[in-house]
Length: 225
Image (cartoon, rainbow, N blue to C red; front, top):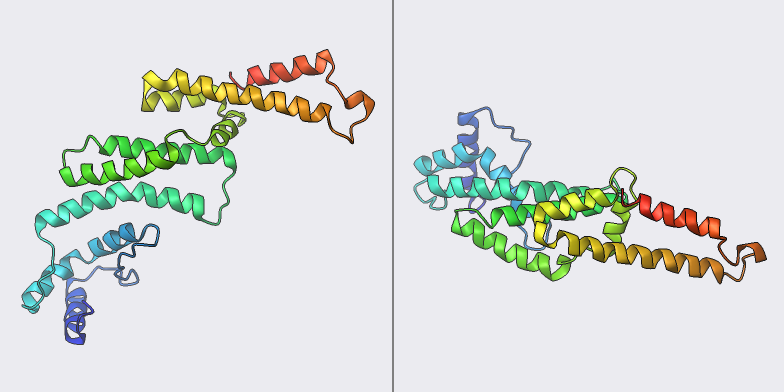
């Protein structure tokens, strides 16, 4: 549209003729180094779909309008990328989510990718496959600290983790849970060790009493419920 001033003027006339378009939403270009720019490009482009079509009639040199099938595929891509747009805005935005909420966002990404791998569209399937390979490179095992933060959330605990893991792959659920539980017990033991060896601790704080240790172990079991 910005290839020439005459083409831009023609396009603006088409927008006015079509009516009902919120022109506050401008057309966006994809930027390879910017999060969500592909989604924003597709979403804004759909708002101007009819003016794009009218431009072909008014400007015979305009050769870049999508076909009906290409528009359908672009819409599929837009809907596929929409949840990623929301998730990245949630994580990278100004709301500063607490650590216990990160696990679910990462889980959503994996679930979306696995679901798209079953898509009948070869292009969508290929795109999801390449994204899944990159996801596995960094998140094949969710960061342990994200899982622990979720377990420590009174509204989630270990049973919530079991639910999310089983939704992805029931066959690996128990293995993942045992791994996280092992890390939790190790964290608990480290806490006891640090507390016992603290140079600023009073003599009464140097060791855990049997009752204190029992209470801590009960708390640890509670996280599993």
